[in-house]
Image 1 (spheres, rainbow, N blue to C red):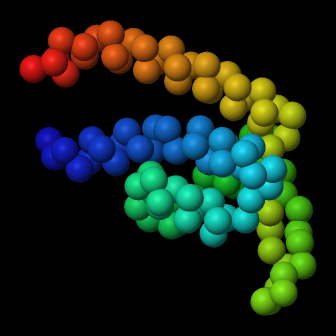
Image 2: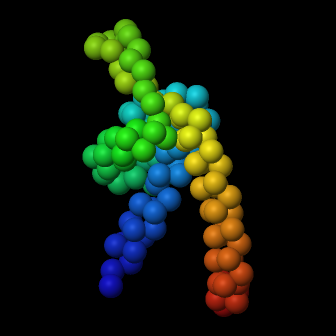
Amino acid sequence: MKLENTKAQMRRGILEMCILAIIDKEGEAYPSDIISMLKSQNLIVVEGTLYPLLSRLKRSELLEYSWKESKSGPPRKYYSLTENGSEFLTDLFSNWQDLQKAVSATTHNLLKA
């Protein structure tokens, strides 16, 4: 088993929460800005990963979008959280905190070595 594959799977597992958190923090976000933020934290490798995720989150009624005029071209699609999306993010974050505690407790002795 290759370490890079495992690392990529771990990143994919938390990517949804990170995307929702970015959009929540910004209020609304343009996909290329989301990609830049994710890349700056080494959370996304392939840009094509974001668009299917945004579509799935929209279909799940966690996101909505609006079109905004652009000074440098055609209108742009900006994403924002729905009320369901905000609640879902809160639940995801709570679960993430529980998971962090469990992993820390489980690996505590391993990390001391």
